[in-house]
Image 1: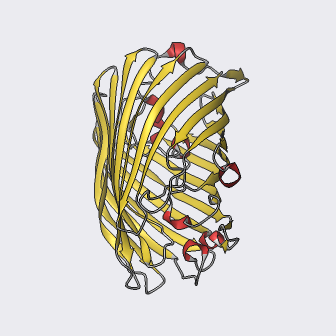
Image 2 (image 1 turned 90 degrees about the vertical axis):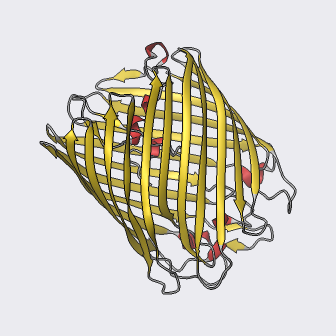
Length: 431
């Protein structure tokens, strides 16, 4: 989890390209998500904020009304399903500097929920914060630094927290420090992301403690990226990441039983191309190799070919199509599995019907291949989701978004399939 750009996008998985002020194609940067078609070229509906000295303060308040058909992400063939109405109260604030050089920004967002079904088991309060800045050293040289603290709630469908009476609450502390420099046709980026995870223990219905705190860990990801501008619209690059997972203690599967050592190290090496074709198609494509080695000799090494494709296509001035393909290795604490090798693809489209009325739709598919140890039965999950909706911009202070989302998991694990239907009406006030 990288907060230098990714905290602002939260659960969205699409990444997009960026162009600097001289028209030179740069590497993909998720901060460009704000330049989706529904946000650009609508000055009459854009949030203005309050100017305080050399800063702009952007407050907002959202009320998300949600209906979910399967609150506990259960298999309908083995368990009765529980549905619920959920009210999300989401106050937030952004403070951005307006300096000619350097930058300093602060963000706080929250999600205070109330459930109609079994609120004592489900209500939660999430908070996300980020403080980030840029220090301009030279014209083409700058340091980027960020720190974030987040109090989050784990998804009920997570296989790492089954049997809990309440959702698992966890904190993250995220630190990013990167140096960026360009000279002539060569660009460099190097630095470190460090993320701390701290989990709260939870109870079962029988009062048994599930020791989720054994999942507490640091994740360290130093990175270096070298790019070469073949032409202003094309940048070839190589990127190398080293990754280390350092757990505080032996980790218990689902918080019970004997713990095992899940510390690991690994790397991700990529080469690729970033491109900008007259702002019609922007993106990057890369291919490489990824590997993860575990200190516990019983956990097999996970490795294989990986790559990424991030694409933004504007077939018309009113339509934007976004796509992503990826492969990565993820953590798991389930007994019998070392980790997951995930392969995913996402596609989204937004079309501006009128200046203040936007249609959006998208879908995601991912396959989670669990790497087995201890002669446990193999597990393979197919995850599918799709959404469709509309957004109406009343004026620069008020907008509404109505959407429908479908989620499905198809797995060979016993009684772990699910289908979920969600309808959401989000009302937003901003100044």
